[in-house]
Length: 634
Image 1 (cartoon, one colour):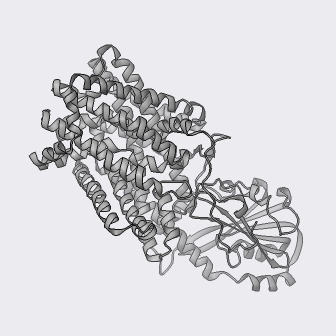
Image 2: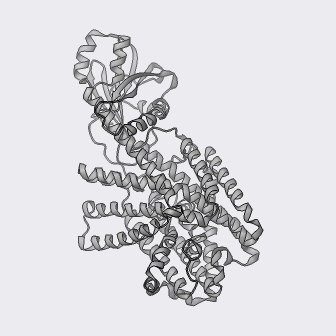
Image 3: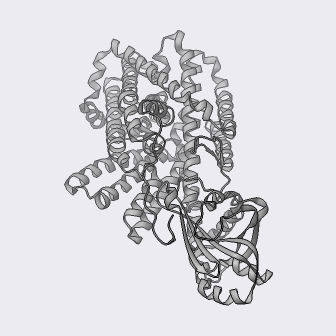
C-alpha cells in the first residue's frame, strides 16, 4: 500500500478470464454477436425493397452480395478484429476505453481535448444506436409472422411492444440466469443461418462468383447514384461490428476472434449467399428473403428462433448501454446515477433505473411512430457509421503517435478505412428526412449533456481550488484554537489539495474538530481496473490530520467503506459506527463572468440537483453522513 497519494498507481494487468476459451467463445455469441448476427433479417431486404428500391437482377444481386462480403472483411475482420482489438486498455475496449488509453499515452493537452470531443461524440451516437437496435431487430423478427400468414400483420406492432416491454422489465431482476442460455441459443441460430444459406447455394452454386470484387465494381460503375443510395442499406450488414471491440473486456480478444472466424463469419456469408441465390430464381422473394429461404412448414419455428435472437441482441445492447453509462460517470462525463448490481457473482451485471426506463419509453415510442422495420431502417445506420468513422480517427492517432507504425503502411490503410466509413456515413445522411434525424437528435442531446457536465464540473473544481485555504495553514491555526472531540471525521473532497469546504463549514458552525481528521479524495484513473495494492495512498499531515487518496478504474465498483477498512498508517483501524462522513453539497450561483453559456449553466445545475447523492453512490452508511451546503459561482 502506497504512503504517497501523489504517486501514480502501477498499472494492473488485464483482469483474467476464469472460464476456458471454448466456453467464452460460446458465451460471446450471445453478447458480442447478437447485433451483427441479426442483420440478415433486414439488410438484404432493405437494400432491394427499402426506401431506394433496385431491380432484382443478376448484376444487382451479385453486386450487393459482393459489397456485403468485402465490407464485412475490411470493416469487421481487418479493422476491428485484426487491428482495433489490439488496442485494449488493460483488457477493456470501446470508444471511451480507447480514448482513455490514448489520453494516458499521449499527454499532449491540446490534442487530448480534441480526442475527448471525438470520444464523447462516439458515446453520444452509441446512445442513439441503443434506442434503434432493439426496436429494429425485434420488429424485423416479428414481421416474419406476415410471411407465415399475411392476416397477422396487424399484430406485429403489439407483439413487438409486448416483447420489448417484458425485456426492459426483466432488467430490474437481472439477466444472469437466462444469460447462461444466450450463447447456446445463438449457436443454434448461427447454425440455422448457415444451413439455410447452404440449401440455397446447392440450387445456385454460381452465386459463389459474387465474392469476386469485380461484381462490386461493376455494380457501382453501372449506376453510381443507385449504388450510393444502396450503400445506406448495405451497411446494415456490418452494424454491431463495434460491439466486438466494446465487449472485449467481458470475454477477451481470443474467444471473440475464435467465434468470429469459425462460427459467425461463415454463417453470415453463407446466409447472404443463400438469400442472393433465392432472389436469382425468385425475384419476388425480395419482400422478405430471410424467412422465404425456409420451407413453408419451418417458417413459424424460424420466426420463433429469430425472435429469440432479436431479444438476445437487444439485451446485449441494453447491457452495453448500462456499461457505457457507468464508464461515462466514472470518467466525469455524467453525474452520479443510481447503479444497482443484479448479480452477486458477475461484477459487470449492473442496472441503472433511469437509463433503463428512458430507453424503454423511447423504444416503445419508436415502434409506435415508425410502425415497421422498413421505416426504422431509415433511422438506422447513421449512428453506427458515425461511431465507426470516429473509431477510425482515434485509430489513426493510435497507429501514428502511440504505436508509431510505418507511415507507408499506416497512412494507406487508414485512407481505405476512412474512405469506406466516410462513404457509408455520407450515404446514410441521405436518410435524414425519412427518419435519420432521430439518432442525430438523440446524439446531439447526449453530446450536449456529456460536454456540459464535464465542462461544468471542471469549472466548479477550478473555482473551489482558487478559494481553497492551504491545508498546512489551516492545521496550524485550527489545531490550537478548536476543541477536539472523540471519533474520526472523514471529509470528502474532489481536490487532492487544499481544505475541503465541508471542513471549513463544520469548524465555522460547530466550533469543533474530531480527534482524527481524514481528508478523502476518490480518483478514477484512465485504466479499467486498479489493483488492491495500488488502490490506497495515505499522507500524514500532522496533528492527526491525514490525506487519503483512493484510486479506482473506470470499470471498478466503488465501495468506500470496503476500501477504508484496509487503510493503514493512519492510526487505529476505522470502525464505521465510530466514523462521521462530511460531504459538501454545492449550490450554483449566476456569475457576472460565466464560464459557459447561461443555458448550459441552467442545464448543469439541473443535472447536479438530480444526481444520485454521494452517500448512496459511494455506499456510505446512511446514519453516519452529514451534508454541509456551500455556494459556488462558475
